[in-house]
Amino acid sequence: MIEATGVRKSFAGREVLRGIDLSVPRGSVTCVIGPSGSGKSTFLRCVNRLERPDGGRILVDGDPIGYEPYRDGLRELRRRDLARQRRDIGMVFQRFHLFPHLTALANVVEGPVGAGRPRAEATKEALALLDRVGLADRRDAYPAQLSGGQQQRVAIARALAMRPKLMLFDEPTSALDPELVGEVLDVMRGLAADGMTMLVVTHELGFAREVADEIVFFDDGQILESGPPSRVLTAPEHPRTRDFVTRVL
Image 1: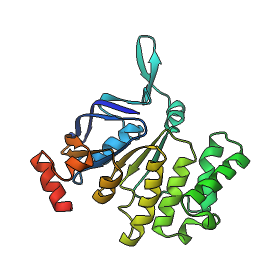
Image 2 (image 1 turned 60 degrees about the horizontal axis):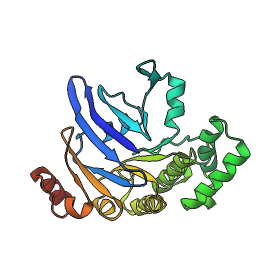
Image 3 (image 1 turned 30 degrees about the vertical axis):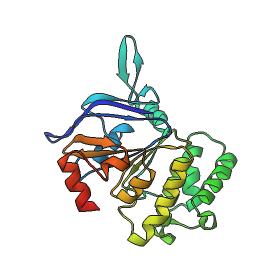
């Protein structure tokens, strides 16, 4: 589903991604771990072109993100076409970014209707999605009336309403009180069980151990180690990975 090759990105002369090669198979869950500032979130934002890589390329389901075939090569997509390409990629951020003036149901309906789906169809699907994330009874609540965990679950339903091929999660529990983390992780476990392809930046190593097919360790803009949770979290090969896992666990 994702094929990243030689991805590089710099900010103000500092290289934060230093040639990332990463493959995410369809229907799998890949968890990205590592210290703050290691480039994890930047890479995630490059996958859906919220950040423009300085080098390398990223394919999602075989299509180059941000580009289209042109003559004998590629050219950058126009903003409208890039927005259309992004519909296949759902993203859930650390902060919920819900529209404060819209109810939970309206937040979920807004994207599909804006993309041209009939409102009745979008509403029916939105209700099913709110039920899926355990919030059917909060359909008419505004974000200010919801807990952080509930807002994040609405954000997940909103992303799913676009019927994405791929879901990206950027530390989706980091802004939550500890007692609210579990309800969001439960929804993500359900998505994984349903076969959704997921790339998850997380510090929740217990969740990664349980759900991930592969764990990727970032440090200083590079991938130092990757493999199944049973190896990376219990017998990491790289000393930096070993030090990080020991401290976090």
